[in-house]
Image 1 (cartoon, rainbow, N blue to C red):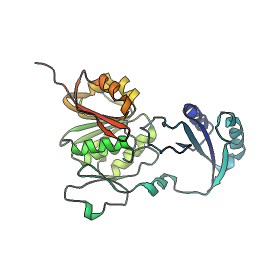
Image 2: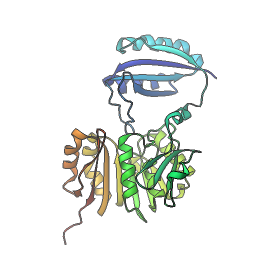
Image 3: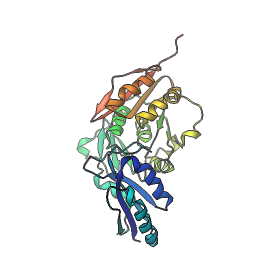
Image 4: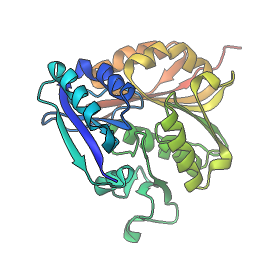
Length: 298
């Protein structure tokens, strides 16, 4: 059936408030995009985008036209442009991302591919490891620099037989990649139920559902793991430093991303007390900070 789409351009600092307002008004889906000409970056799960102007788009059932028109009039004073209402033909919206998602290699062995696609045989070898991905309603395809940094780090890490914790899992791409690269077990955490659903679905499609736990952070029991990856934002990484540190076993590995270059020093300072940190890895304007948990002195 057709759908009603309401779209409006708003200041970045209004995005979270107006997204919630649209959801509370009955929107079936709300998406955030770039209202200007800046490159569209994939934010970490649950994070607000970095654009100055944000295009907010919401889908409603067709019978809600009067409600949508009233909502548009209410939101107009907060918008940078006049709200627009369109009637859209039905589409497989969760598959639209495939138009720009092609098989991509990260590191030496790891490929991330849309479901049903494979890399060119001329580019693969006997050690090629493939993750088939459909992010659905959650972020994470590997095409943003922060995710790419984490995937390349995992490709080079020694994961054989280890437990990997993916803190802020989004589509589950990092946890699933770790399992495909030899980890024995993975734990995927996210506060967003859509992310947990996407992760569980992607794990089944990649044949690793029996080796992954998909949980909200509040449901994680006290534990320590050999490898922890967190691709979120610099602010939460600093705030969560005591908790994330405690989750890594002595001698265990840590990788943190979602960090702009100018934020790297502050994030590193929050972890240097418990980890021996490697030099930061940089891709575009983003940084990955990795290190190893210090063992207690005898």
